[in-house]
Length: 582
Image (cartoon, rainbow, N blue to C red; front, side, top):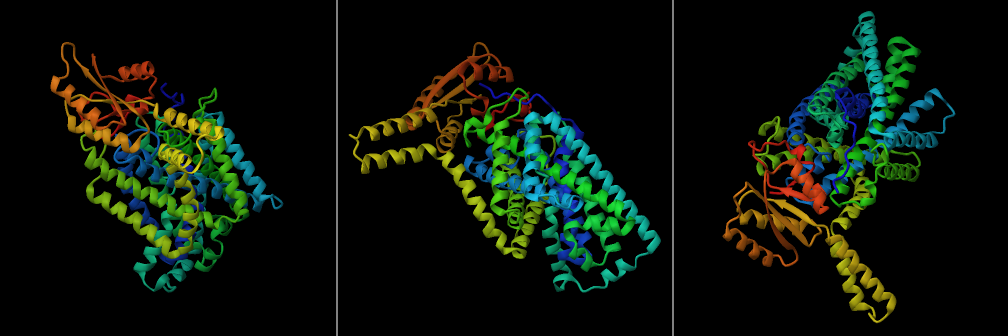
């Protein structure tokens, strides 16, 4: 059956708030990080980050506009390259969301402890994660209302802080800024200071990828607006906060208070009341980043589960249309990491940094593959080749800079990445592994033993059940070479023993005899896949796809087409999740 879609469609404010809370929470820490590595030139590093993010607006707009389905970088690579490559992007994105949720929740409670001194941080962090798990289970519409409230309060707090900092400078002058600029340049030279400052400041755009992971829950035309809005917030506030911090606080004081820089700024420019307000804002917006992680991971995991990369039990929905099991499993994983690290989350920061920068780079690579392999696929906008390469190089540069600054982070990242990718690789190759297990049973053990015989039969039945899933490929022309590519892709990427090749002809037309005989040759060429050719008369429409999906009991995401041209009458999102493979 076709998977049920969430009923709620989010508007611009709700979608921007969900993804914007994550990226805008960076204002709380990224200015201090940039100052730590770029000193008085931190605000310039943050402006460069804004330029890079501007380039990524076009990249995300082109990829998601052409392939408007949940999954972000995973979806981009799935429809342009192999399932294994797409799974790499999925693993990195999952790690990024997990690290984001745990770090944000823990930091939110650490800020709250400044207001409530005896707060048990670890227990409170678990409680916060549980609250947002509950909100997502209730439904994305309800959770978006919370996100909107947090986002508006956060932007108001930043405007208030910036305004009072401006008044403070008008009254007290620019002496502190002048003294900071007179200090020696970090790392001995301006280019190195900007390089390391830029590398650290790229953390300020973490969360930009979130909107692409729940694009199917957004109203038509909303996604590019979320990209624009996030870019505006980051490009204005991150450099501005860094500039104002350098104007009102000496650099040593900024570095010494980097975990609560905005609170210190608030106290400096207007007193304890503004410091308290900023602390409340920090608790709320970091909590909003937790919500973003839950919403984003729900969209991503649902997509990769539909593609049989994760177990199907995760797709169960409640009466509100939420995939509640995904939220529960994600909550349990976050809590386990929190308890294992005992709240000391510096190591997870390394996972966070490397994972999200790698995801950004893979998205850029996905854009290249889209241009080359799906060049005729309609899309609302296109990124330029030069800007695309500059953006990818910038992200790779930031990734290298972070590894140079924190070489231990790479080792910690691998400790989390290897188990994650291992689980996905096992799912991708589960039939091959089961067949290997059968060979081991036959070779090493006595097949007469009843227990072993039963195990042998059970494994065989499991393999048959996995391979029983049928796939469909819709073809509009007699192109045997293209069909050969289709069979190669399915053999190398999917678990199946049967493929329906379907042609939809106008009344009175049919396939040529040569094409039918060529299909018989292909069927013999791939003995592990039974090819069934079906000719239908009518018009290829979304309603026909849905009808065949229900009639044959084949989910739409197991149906493939070639890349459509701009003359194709339907947007890809109207086809219900049909995949592109050639």
